[in-house]
Length: 252
Image 1 (cartoon, rainbow, N blue to C red):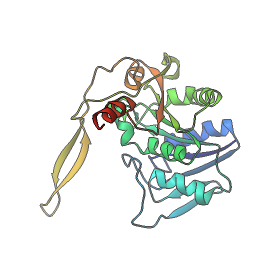
Image 2: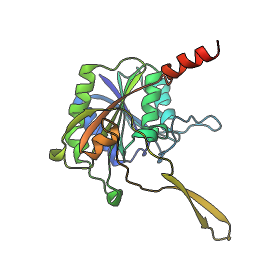
Image 3: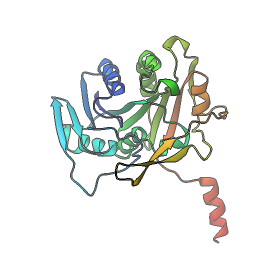
Image 4: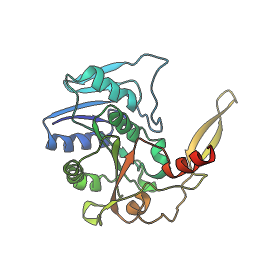
């Protein structure tokens, strides 16, 4: 099995190193094509107005000055001699759940892989707010291999990607694995912080405003909050069929 690894935290991210360890347990044919720098929050964006730069670190490890989506395209179209059988994206520092999947470069890489016809899994490790710079990777390290194997044994249908989130706890504290729905967050989680530069001009940072929410049962947020691993199948087809049928009647 040929595996392509990527992420949105960058080529030097600890989560990517952990994912490489897991992938090499599954296969000896593992390739890494990941962003040169942190691309968190870039979503499913492409670099179209400037060239991509490719840097080879070793025989099967490459850094791209571009987005996670760029990396998947570069990996399949230029770097790898043959298409991969599987794309693993992550392991992200911090969860990618609920509405955040639309911002996530980690999930976007798996989306691009799915569009290109390759089975794809996004993986993220929850991090406690006061330990973001020193995350505990124990749950992903202890359970990642088994989760990937179980997903592959079940199969990934065309047009579907798997989004996996590990809870912020030790491996022996994981309560199980939940197959979940995508949850939802309330508005107001993101804010803007104004600062003043050395020339007395304002500049701005978009920032997270942490707010604890009571998660809906059977969602990704609920599972991780309860120290369970969340596995959420996501579809490329975003059509709301129920609304589509009602709208069709309204336009008759």
